[in-house]
Length: 140
Ligand code: IDP
Image (tube, rainbow, N blue to C red; front, side, top):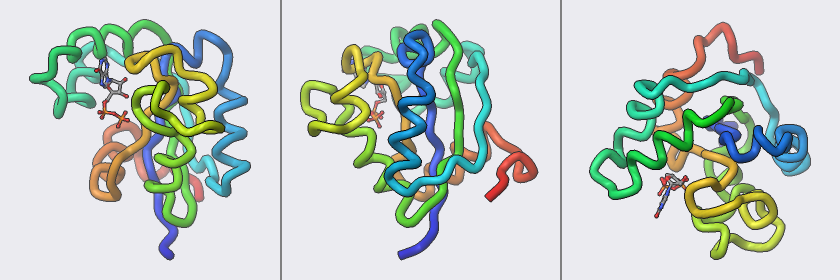
């Protein structure tokens, strides 16, 4: 198995409820290392570009509004099979379908306000990491 990196975002519903530490504990307890992290407010343009793949979806406007409704924590997680492992730690997009013990089952408010983002492939992870971090900001 290869050591990988993935892009994670702790979303505004979770920062509003002060859940950053609890969510980070899930990553660390499951063998992922937080090798870069910053708390930012996304601009509308950044959120639209980041979720550009969903531009044609009915929920796109609401998703962008939600993502800029408060601070987010963007982070790079590193570990064995980090992309897939993080998706497992997060749980399904809709918390109603998320397995017990996952972040979304335990913390998400709705299918939209679902507490975390995680890259869905190694290729997208590389693009998403480069979108938020310079190489010098990632300390493995
Ligand atoms: P993922 O975050 O689990 O990879 P995606 O299908 O890529 O799921 O959707 C991106 C984000 O868009 C979700 O995390 C969620 O915040 C939002 N979203 C997805 N489907 C819906 C929906 O049906 N209604 C509202 N928001 C949605």
